Image (cartoon, each protein chain N blue to C red):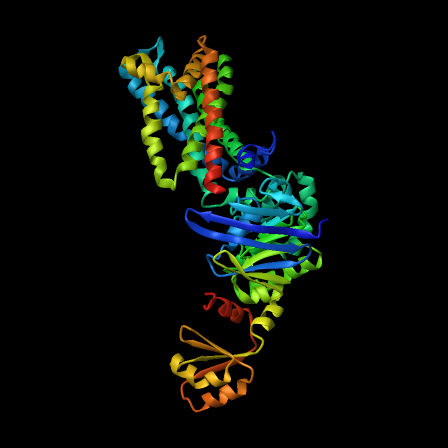
Length: 262
Length: 303
């Protein structure tokens, strides 16, 4: 049992960096296309919904709809970027490309690899979320300098969603299963977490459920920072995101150990 | 350094109800090339994975480079190089980048990796390909790069799972020649193979596996002499059973495999005389090899 745990845990605090750097090197070769891909989708939502729907709904939560939506889209883009990196790219490295297998011939443990992949997915989420935020800020939909508080939250959001997606990656027999996670988990979360409309528009039980969702916690931190308002329950939101980042990490590492090293 | 590089004692492994490795014991001395020879499904790859600590045995004891595995496999792996059955190079990276990235997994600094890259490229005969993308390399070049990658941590022991499977004969010979040069440098090699020729040419000793059991072990030529010890005549193109009764008196032993009849005869000339008046037969006389050993031990051909 001892060796089981050792293989699933990071061997030290820095081994993961080699995995992160490997992914960074691969990304550098396609950086422009990758950034455009990460930014285009949330940007289209922001402006399509923001201006189109914004004309109909008017002011929301004491601000223009675009400004309201911007915080939701920053958090959502971090969620999407982290998730897609993990369920598609990391899955490919684990499965078809056998990159993880090669890494396991070295000093690194499975825990090191998973941590490196999470850190990398969080990095991509940070780039995507920050990109949207900069665009929103340039257009005047976000308040300087309080949006700086949103930066660490975007990274943490990326980490939490990468960690959750890592469980899906560990369990999925093939790519075909990821669509279930997208349509049954992520898309409902988008509408339950207050990304596109305020949570208080939801029926009571859904509002209760929303308190548990990581995206809701992320938005509750990012939106006030972008609107230049004080955020409430900061400790609770950060704590919730940390739990979503840490627990699935250990669970997924244990699942990978069973999958790859039995 | 310990004299024994790998020691397996009564190792067993089953997946669900299927026994893959069954009470296997063998040891590999430092500096030798040891082969695990057997057909697909004999448990070779599972044994290689267990030696690396990537799979835990259900029972038995494994020691690699003096370290218990899988308990302290990470320590052992620092001194092991691995050539896997399926290439797992980073295809989007150049040859050089692959080595750089892999060196980092061993905690090597960029400077340390840079220092060994020229000699690794020279060893792999890839000097001119340093900046080529791996996806542009031929199968043989990829294998050589995998071999160079396995040497980046200057390992004492190389674990190779089917190192030449899927290569054309020219590329295969080049790999064999490279492996012999590693043995000359004092490296220990354990390799799995289902190529008899590979086992015969490279291995100091080998263990013949069938269904996870060690059915014979020794030096290739000692095994051949001991278990066969005479010329072999292969006969095709007739009714094997009828031919069998015809040449039985002159043969040590006769094996039928598919449409081929293998006749082990101390005096092959007598057998040939008996077959001379038969039209349409193809008769091939040759020295015995490991293929015959396997056929003798298992009653079937390897592939």
